[in-house]
Image 1 (tube, rainbow, N blue to C red):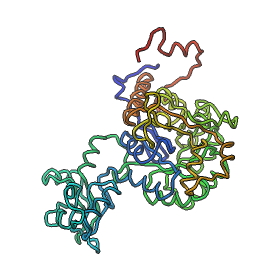
Image 2 (cartoon, rainbow, N blue to C red):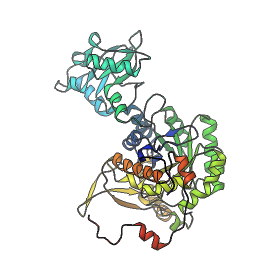
Image 3 (cartoon, rainbow, N blue to C red):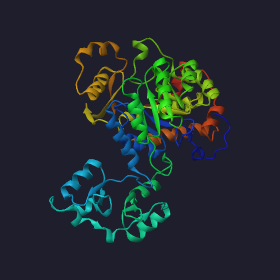
Length: 465
């Protein structure tokens, strides 16, 4: 502990650099794993001020769709709102709303002129064969706004006319966007959320270094993904460096790239020449077996400390990936030189992680697996090709560097993240740190004995529960 002028842990700011150019309001990123992050998790993370990285083990089109779900979830203006033709039926409107996950559609003609808006409430008790134009709110009664409308003006329109959706139109009645009361309200509910320049949720997405990686990267950038994560187990390789160079050449310097993983200063420096953030961690994850299978790896705190000076010299943020079991580990990772941490296991049992809740021995659980595990590799091949490569099963069994496991069901990701952030702020308060950089400057590491470790835990009592 250090002398502190903080009167409360709430005075501590957890804002951190995600990349050279992007900040997050909490230094927590959800892992690009198929049992951790898809759109639901990414939305939850962005709302809390962090970031979710959508995994790459799905077809390009599906990954882009997941990104767009995040971008459309909440924003001041939805730039390209969903529409339906004037001559469509109620049944078609229902299907479109269900498919798109929205509660309203703008009604247009063949020349994209706005004729009205139809909502789920409008069609709730209507016959399937009824035409949309008979049940919609027509243009004559539509409340609209012009391009450039401010949030304050939109709020006043919603309050005055008691509507939930306001189309933005040009002088020729072409749709240019949509403002919803839900999105404006959500902005008030999540004041510290991570948002892009257009007020939409920030989101990351992973790409590999082989096969369709360039096509995937281009599609994700076109979908306005905020950051690409070049995601491989061994980042300090020519394959990764070549992929980073190619992405830079094709997509330019404005694209924010996170790449890894590495565990040495040399590896960090090589990747930092092309990336805007470098992920550090070889083998610390809860479901990773690289160290016992390959015999290679570096203890995570040692790896962060080894790479931190290289990070400072390069001016590139360090993301600590793996080994985070509690808020205390986040404090230690940031103290050692990380700017952010990537977590998987702590979020895998939440409502927002992919997969169903199962009951085992009377306890609710969810499946969590390393992306180099046997079944994860088979699953991602099947998703990409449509069939399981049985001729490669033996190779995968031999190559597996991860396991599948059950984790306890934890409820909402929001609750988990809030607890982690509160623990982090407590650590900052003890260290007299108002900011993440101050946390690192003020922290001093000491070596403790096993007896001291036991003393750190609850002891000499019988715990309740």
